[in-house]
Image 1 (tube, each protein chain N blue to C red):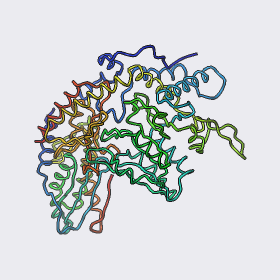
Image 2: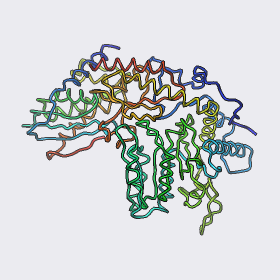
Image 3: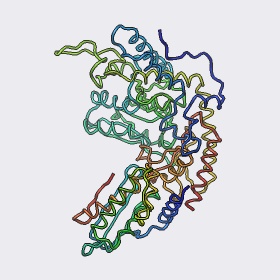
Image 4: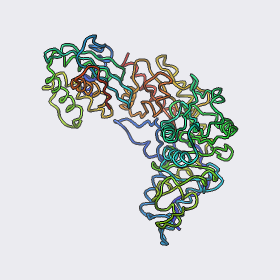
Length: 152
Length: 417
């Protein structure tokens, strides 16, 4: 197991055990639910946006370690970001997890997103890691509150 | 004439090392580890004889069947029909007219729903399935109910994964027109007492289809002794190729049913005014079928006949017991489906570890298991779990492989501790 694998393992297990920003916001401006019917993973995401900046975000749901850790890490990354910045992160995330595993990725420039490079090693699990990010995208796009969106 | 299907000369002695040599894939590695294949309920591996048959068909015998007078077409037809005869004997059907080739269990069930269902089922009629059905034995009936106004009823299951037979008596009424029931549950491993149920179903005048996808490879099945009206199974779960399956139907049932699909091979005469249909079984086999697949299925059945179902059952039972005992040593593991009457399928959940994480980590050790809902979401809901991990054994698996699996599982538990 190389160092990246090891890091990946540690980070995923840590966030799985103690997920950050877990729960539901009492007050929120954006909301979406995500569901991966293949494995039954579910996520409920609430976001509080003020002056175009993500002030608060929480997620709740049941799922595998990869989906849970991905959601947890995502919440820590987007807090304090503008909607546009968060959307750029969503795109970068997608780019990372879908790139060919043999491609060299310069992890230095990726910051905290680097941990998701490891997901490429498990093609069958990319959907698990992506669930929270798809749901975030839907939440940010939702004009109305409490829009129920089912995502494959 | 060229023969692809071999004759059985003698029963093979059950020597596990020799038997494993018949399955070339068992000698490959995955992620640098020897493959441990425990996903046999999803699909079984293929013996060399089946692999060779496919290659030899396309190399030496490829041509279309039931057409033309040339040598190759004749030889291919003869092998295709020889395989049908083998299947007929294997399940003790009265004649080859009762053996319809399909793409698999799913298509076999769809054929009955579409042809028999549309002709004979009417508004208010009841169709009965069970909670442990594969989605393929739920959705065709749901669709039919929507179209014809029939009512779908469901036999519940006990906490140990057995059918609630006491409820069956309440559910079976004069309104019941068709029961479609799985013989062995793919997610729980439960073996249902189908003979008893078939007799009960007939006593209220209903017909019954048996989904034998998970049983045909484990037990001798005698459709005449069972007296089921239909029986469906897939070739790929009985060591044959994918894309070929069988629907058995009693001749009088099949005779009364309209064609399922129309086109070539299923006709007698065609004019723009009127078409007359071919005899059974070809009435239900429209278009050029999976010829190589059918012949491969014949060879697969011959292969297991040379081993003998008794020896197969003995080996698989011992693997089931060993795996069950091995899993019981972990307090954090719960087995889902604990009937005393089970096939070699063990579904389990682990406290606080999602099955997909288990599956991914075992895969890194070369161990192939199934994780998810196994196309049986009602069963998952019944037991209050989103998914399970499932190991399913074939006769070529060994206790040593179960030890490799158990050790890998220990590492998973350690990692999440």
